[in-house]
Amino acid sequence: MRIAVVGGGLAGLAVALGCEEAGHDVTLYEASDRLGGRMMTRPEGHHLIDLGFHVLHTAYPALKRWVDVPSLRGKPMDACTMTIQPSTGRRRVLGDALKAPRYLLPTLRSVGIGDGLRFLRWRLSTSPKDLERSMDAVTPTIELGLKQRNFTAETQRVLGPLFAGITLDPSLSERMAFADFTWSAMSHGQMIVPEHGIAAVPEQLAQRLASTTVNLNTEISAITNTSVEADGEVHAFDRVVLTVPQHVATRLLPELSSDHSPVERLTSTVAFVAPQPPYKQARLLLNEEWGGQANTVLHVHLPTNVHPHPEGEHWVVATLVGQDADEPDVTA
Ligand SMILES: Cc1cc2nc3c(=O)[nH]c(=O)nc-3n(C[C@H](O)[C@H](O)[C@H](O)COP(=O)(O)OP(=O)(O)OC[C@H]3O[C@@H](n4cnc5c(N)ncnc54)[C@H](O)[C@@H]3O)c2cc1C
Image (tube, rainbow, N blue to C red):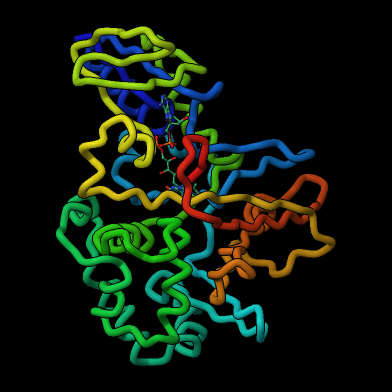
C-alpha cells in the first residue's frame, strides 16, 4: 500500500517505521525543517537543553517496542517530586516510599497520614500489565477524578501542578484515565533523562527509516482518506495517517471539533547557569502557586543534577506555560 504520514514527530516516525517494516511504501510530510516534533534539544554552550522538561518512562510499553533504551544512556530521576510555595518558601516532598522507604516520613509530613493512605491505595490499584488498557477507561476529568479520590485541598495543590505539568492543561480537563496511566508508569518504572537530550529518541527512529520518503518543509493543507494537499498539489495514496497536534488535526478534519476540543497551550523554556544549584537532587520542583499572569513558571528542573556538566556548570531550566495556543507553530 502507498501510505502518507502527516507529521514527523515521534508518532509519525513510529508509524512510518511500522508501516515500512510491514512492507508498505511510505511518504512522510513534515511542515518544519526537522524531524522530532515536540521532542527538541538545543545546544547551549557545552550543554544540551531539552525544550520543556522531558523524561522517558521506562514502563511505557510503546517505549520498549520502538526504542533501544540502553543506547540512550539515560539516568533516572529520583522517585520523588518536590513542590514550593514561592510566597512562603515552603517546600514539600512527595516520594514513592514503596520504591525508596526514605521518602515515607517526608511524604507523610507533606500530605498527612490520610492522604498518605490515599496515595498508597492509588499506587496499589495500578498494575504494569494494564498500562495501555487503563487509557481506554471512561473516566471523568483529572480535576474531578482527584476530588473523587478524596485528596484534601492541600494535597491537590501538589497534584494540580503535577498533572497540569504533564498534560500542560491548567484546567485539568484531560481524562483521569491519562493521570492513572501516568501514575502507573511512575509507579512501575523509572523516569530517565537521555544523556544527549530527548531529541535522541526521535533521532533514533529517524535513523532506522530505510525506504520512507521524507519531505521536510512541507505543510499539508488538506487531507482526505486517500489524498494529501501540499503547496497546491494533491497527492494520491491508499491510506493517510495523521500524526499532528490536536489543534492541527481539528483544522484538517473539522468533524473532530465537536467531541475533541483542543486544549493546547504555548510553553516556553528558560535556561540559565546558576553559581550553585538551588538543590542537589535529580528532582523536579513544582510551583504550588502556579497560575495567573504573575506566576507562569510551572516547574524547575536541574538537568546537571542528573547528568553532571563536564566543567561543573549548574543549569537551571524553568518551564513556563502561557496563553491558549491557536497557531500551528505552538510547542504544546
Ligand atoms: C513542554 C513539554 C514537556 C513534555 N514532557 C514530556 C515528558 O516528560 N515525557 C513524555 O513522554 N512526553 C512529554 N511531552 C510530550 C511529548 O513531547 C509529545 O507527546 C510527543 O513529542 C508528541 O509527539 P507527536 O508525534 O504526537 O506530536 P509532535 O511532536 O507535535 O509532532 C507533530 C509534527 O507534525 C508536524 N506538523 C504539524 N502540522 C503539520 C502539517 N499541517 N503538515 C505536516 N506536518 C505538520 C509538526 O511540525 C510536528 O513535527 C512533553 C511535551 C512538552 C511540550
